[in-house]
Each structure stands twice: as C-alpha cells, then as structure tokens.
Image (cartoon, rainbow, N blue to C red):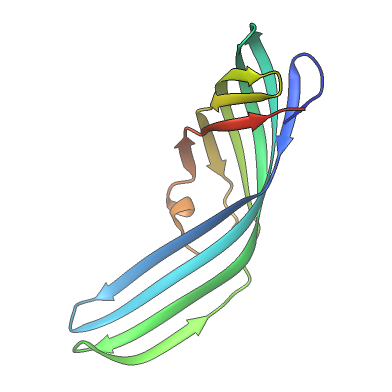
Length: 154
C-alpha cells in the first residue's frame, strides 16, 4: 500500500486464481464427463479512503478494479459406455480477459507505523466477458469476501 496523502492510498499486487469444474452428462452406464480448468494471473488496483484514525486504529473504505489474464485453459472430455472409456479428448481455447470491480470497508490495527493487521469485507462483481465458457463466476458474478492479513505501508 502506498500513501498518497493524509486520507488517500493506493495498492496493487499480483494474485493467482485457479477455477476448476466437472460436468457429468448421462447415466453411470453411458456418460460424458468434462473437466474444465482455467488459471488466471490477476493485477488488482485498489484505492482506499481513510475515514477515521487514532494512534493504533484506522477505518477506511475501498474501491477497486482487477484485470485477470488467462494463463492456462483446457477442457478434458471422457466418453464412456458401461463404465469403460471409449474416447478421451483435450481441447484448449483462447480465453478472454476477466475484469472485476470491488467495493469494501476495512479496519486496521497498526502494529508499527508501517505494519498493520487488517480485516476488509468486500463485494466483488465479475464483469461478463461475452464468451460461452461457463464457470462459477458466470453463474455467480457477485461474490462477498472477508480478506484479512498483514499490510505493509510506505
């Protein structure tokens, strides 16, 4: 986190996300099983506004945007009849970028002037990418999270 002035700060970093899904179509006697995996490398940028502060505590609000770049995508399909595999196939495709926005509020306890413990509930919205690839994010584009951890400011 980088302080801009008395109230505003900005933070960025890298995150890695792996989404994995398994689809089963049919019955145990005749089925198609697909296993889809998408790996993303994300670059979040978030601004924070300091609402209240005393010697050790801060409360703040956040607003952010994140860009996730697809690193790897594949879908493995297994066709089986009477429990025996008839055909296996693997396909890869170009996956679009995944954009999201977030809003949240947080509280932080300062251990030292530059190090603190924080708790930051937030709501994130995954912007539809226009593709037909189904993931948890296409079915549930709004997610709620409660990140916590150690923050270093300079």
